[in-house]
Length: 351
Image 1 (tube, rainbow, N blue to C red):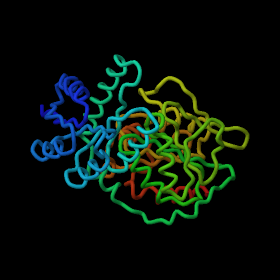
Image 2: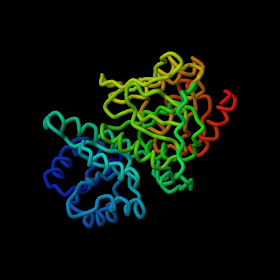
Image 3: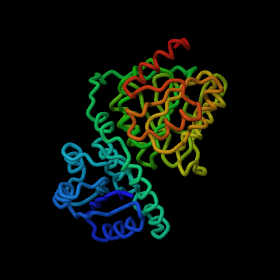
Image 4: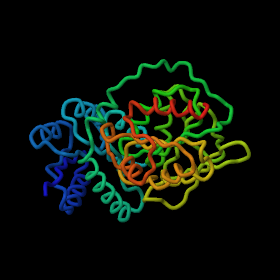
């Protein structure tokens, strides 16, 4: 079996040693080298051609983001960012996503023994996912410029009578950015689960808000879902939509993970199936695993119309594939066609 060639880039010799020794324990992974700076990393990339790179962007005396940008331009490699669970870590991670990073793994915080084990397990899984991604689809999403003028941003205050629910994971940050740039303000409220930790979702929402004509925010309990607004599930919490009188409202709670995820698409889609029914449109974007697939099928049985991103445009065709296989998808289209399909469906619903 061909092993996954991994390059570790970190200025800390201790971190390089730990990551290298732990990753080598997995028979599917081969650590082809470690680098303490971009100059060493560049030479190793050219000579050894790694399948996946891990990169700590929070390094002194160097710009990890600029290095990532150059790598993605000249030697595109699926890259996983090693980041701290802090406000600064979240900001740097978002810049890394913007410049082509595939995913983020969190550094251990307090309980070093347990957190380190969790981190290595998470990193190992994400390396295996990254080795199979469609890097060309990822690059395409990053390179496309829609060209909207975002100076005028309308925030429509009237409560929505329909809800658009979106689930996404690996590759979803750029897919969501691409999709929202193609949408106008005259839309029903949109609720989104993108798999991310705390701090990251707040920065992600701010980034999307700056890019889109829609008003985008990190969701909070008691938010009323209103037209022209997008609500991003907060990292570390589960988000639900429920009906209160004639309005749809949001509830965000700290509770058990589902599919080892918080937020989980399954939790959101379950609530959409229960409370929104045939007033819902579901969208499943790129991502690994099957989070939300069965609940999306329940949405469809309860009258929702569901759109899936196709394999060719997905960075990882996991969640859309799982949804399609369990009969949840009404129409599968490319990322570029989702906005058209969404508007076409809204017309039939009497937008």
